[in-house]
Structures are given as structure tokens and as C-alpha cells.
Amino acid sequence: MLYQIYEAQRSLMEPFADFAKAAAKLYGNPLTPLGQAPMAQRISAGYDLIYRLGKDYEKPEFGIKTVDVGGTEVAIHERIEIQRPFCELRRFKRFSDDPETLRQMKAQPAVLVVAPLSGHYATLLRDTVHTLLRNHKVYVTDWKNARTVPLEQGNFHLHDYVNDVQSFIRHLQLTYGRCHVISVCQPTVPVLAAVSLMASRGEATPISMTMMGGPIDARKSPTAVNNLAMNKSREWFESNVIYRVPTNFTGAGRLVYPGFLQHTGFVAMNPDRHMSSHYDYFKNLIRGDDVSTEAHRKFYDEYNAVLDMDAHYYLETIETVFQEFKLVKGTWDVANPTGELERVRPADIQHTALLTVEGELDDISGSGQTRAAHDLCTGIPQAHKMHLEAQGAGHYGIFSGRRWREVVYPQVSAFIATHHAKPLMAAKAQPSGKASAQAKTALTESKPAAKRPRAAAPVARRR
Image (cartoon, rainbow, N blue to C red; front, side):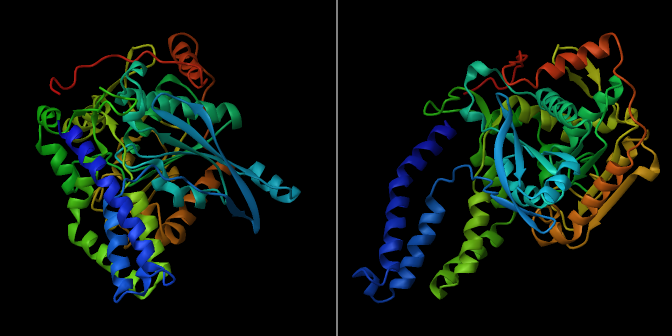
């Protein structure tokens, strides 16, 4: 019932939020009678803050229209390359009429950015994508809000995530011959699994994989996020955080981990910081500091926009990554598109360079959790491994903001460029037999019309 109660409250708040927005404009306009009232600016600021706290936050747009490539401004066309029930592979195509710029862009590496499916939309990586577009062809996994996916599309499991990543890699390899992969936070685990499985089959793997702030080994320096997942049983999560989508959404009846619960958890981690930020916003409105107020709006438009996750995927991630540590223990079996189980063996990766990135002040993925990938990928030559710790950077600072642009990105870009120019020994040709059949089956899934059978799995017995 919690989801239904939340939706009822949101519906009741909507007209009050709209009223607060209108009142803020009336009191904030000096040409209206209300704008001439005593303390009109303070009243306007108060109503604006009420509106911001009460409004419903929809999925933001990436909004990347242009980017600078070698001193030339080029246009960006955003399009969906592959459509899946729970994910869209989104491409940011660059256009220019300058012959030299076109030649330069054509030679640049293709990069698949695997965005987190952990509460926020892929637009959280807007700064990541915008910066990468200077020197790379960029694709992003844009995960869908589970409450918008009809029940007839089946359930979404952790192995579906892994299989989707593999097929997206194959799509880029088919298009460009080779590619690079960047995973941010949560997807470091399924991306490492995806590349491991491809290597075990003898498939061509990406030239490089960059893993940023992810829980490869959540046992190391556990954070508050890790502790919650480790100290509660799967049954506790099923009983307390899994709900059915209400009837006013297209995914009505689907079992999900609701985005509003995840958002509550985000805020609860640093409540004082958020209260201070909103109070500063109120003061900046009174002062007329448009730059600061706009920066606040942009941040919270993104931060407050959250999505629901399919319960099967969410519970399997908790169990696999934070409770049983199957990746680091070598006990993780992933179902491929044909339903067969394959063991994840990172040691089989030999032809993919590895870069791991951690933030010194990361309070979501603790120190050493991402770096643990180096211990697992024993087949990669040491000379083709690199670790970067971004001093003074928190979790978001390693992929967004000044430290990302000035400290992290230059090293990520240089790592990709170095291995793109001189990759590790090329992978063997596609093997025959069973492994080849599995690869071909997965490759056909890159076609938009393909529809996967999704295995059913018991999850919550309530609601």
C-alpha cells in the first residue's frame, strides 16, 4: 500500500505546487500589484522553495546540443540506436561541415558508457558524456523506469543486464571494428561480468574498460550503503522495500523497488547538507543571485528525478554483489540468452586494458572496492593496468564537475587513446561450436525487433 499512499499524496500536492509556482511569479514580478507588497521578494522566494519541494520531477533531458571538437563547434544529434524493453542504447552523433574536423572525428575511438541502474536516470552522466564527446564517439545505456514497462515485456534480471551490455558491445564492434567501455558506479560489476564471459568464449573484447567508483568487492571499506545491503536479509528487502506499481502507470502490477524510496535514502545520508542547500537557495533568491539559483535548480532537477527498478534485478544485485560477493569469490553463474549458465571468470580477460578510478572521499563505493578488479583480472598484463585515485573527489566528483573535467577525464582520455593506438594482441577469431552459437544468438539481440524470453523468478509474496 505504500506506493499507492505515496501516489495519492503526490496527486494531492500537485495543485498546491502549481499554486506556489504561480504565487512565486506574481510576488516576484514588480509590475503586478502583489509585486509591490512589502517583503514581496521574500514571499516570492518562499513560494518558489515550496514549489521546488513539492513538485514532481520528471526524467530530465541530456540537452547536449553542441560540443567543441578541436576548436570547432559541432552539432549533436541524439538518437536511439537500439530499443530494448528495459533499456535504450542512445547515440550522440556529431555533425560538422568542416572537412578537417570530420576527418578528426572519424578517427576517434568509439566508447560505450554504461550508466548506473541504481535509482537515477542516465542523464546523471550528462557532464561525463559532454566531456567525452570532445574526443570520442559516444553511446550510453539509457535505462528505463520499470513502472513504464508493461508486464507483458517480462521481468528484468541481473543476467539480462549482463546480456544487454554484451550485445551493445558487439553492436559497437560490428559498427567500428573495436570499442572501449566505461562503467560508472553500479555497472562496474555487470560490465566486468559481460567482458569476462565474452573472453571465456573467445569473443573479441573491448580494447579497454574503465571502471569508476563501483562495488567490485564491497567487502573493502564498506560504506553506509554497503552496510545496509550486507546486514539485511533478502527476505527483509522483499518484505519492506518491494511494492507493486499502481494502476495509473503502464507497468501496473509490476514488482519494483520504487524510486521514491531510493531518493529518501539518498537524502537521509546527508540531511543537513540538503537543508543547508535549500536555505542557501532561498537566500540567493532574495539576493537575486541568478547564477547560484540556476545551479541549484539544475542539480536538484537531476538529483530528485528517480526511477523504479524491477524487483528481480534489484534483489539479485543485493544478493550477488553485497551479500554473497559472487564475483570476487568466483561463484557467479550468469544465464545467457539461451538460458544456459556460464561461470564468470575475470581471469580469462587478456586483450582488454583496465583502468580503475576511485574518489578519495567517496562515501558510496569505499576505497579499494573498484581497485579490486585488478586482483581479479590476472590475465591482463600488468603494464596494461592503471589505477587512479582522485584526490578531494567524492563519488559524483569522479564523473561530474570540475575534478572530473580537469583531473579524471584527461587521464581517462589518455588511457583510451594510448590503447586505441596500440591495443593488446587481437583476440582470436570466433570459435566454432557451442561458444560461437551463443555469440551469434546474443548478436541477433542487437536488432530492435528482437524480443527476449525472460525467465520467471519468485520474488515477493506480498502486495
